Length: 149
Image (cartoon, rainbow, N blue to C red; front, side, top):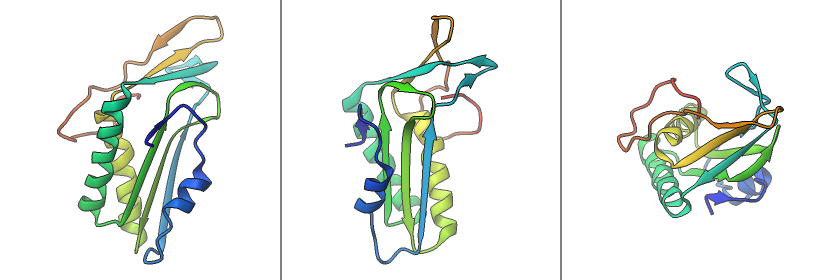
């Protein structure tokens, strides 16, 4: 499962992706922070169109494996209400060598933000909330450092 409403178990992802031919393991874990655009954040809610998000994440994993020549790329994203410090996304990449694993992991998180239909709603201490503008979804995979997804 790529989309879950349960806490992400990074240790389980590491265990399930074990690959003896790989000497590099890169784990990226995104966690909910307590601020956005200079405003305090109390918690967040992620929502997704699950069937499409699952398909896009599977396609992205396959693309990362092919593009960077890494045997393993696994992505899990959480939906629902998350508190500050909880994991919202985890990416596990395994490769024979570290350079490819680092590049593949960075590409995976950057591209995920452009392709996967997941929305982020900030809840503020004063009781108000707002969806983050994020970045436009794109099927082409072109991405930069802009955006806040």
